[in-house]
Length: 139
Image (tube, rainbow, N blue to C red):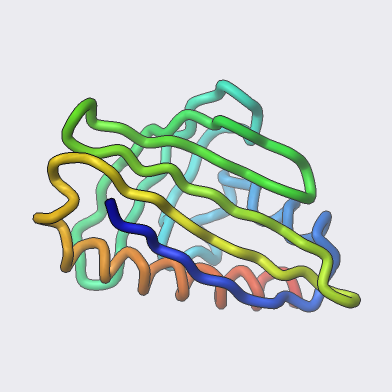
């Protein structure tokens, strides 16, 4: 198992962060990590996400939304049965006049030990996405 975990404080309320975070169709305008997105932040729905960690090839993932709590939490699960499962979570918490955003992914499966470099780059992608989201929301 490997856990990727990043946080950032954004100078806007959680609902404003949520609105940008869940507008998947506009990801290509600002997101350097998830280059394209389709779908809705609705429990049980399937998203289509083109993910491109820094220094890696773009790959299409189709995770299932496990939890969508507007202004609070978004969780999805991507899987290749037995080989790899990634549970991705965004948690939005009020922080003064802004929002503390935590982006976390728990990776499990037989492939995890062989993906060290890719997962390091993926964590770098989380950080890049966090900063881009901050710029986008704060305008």
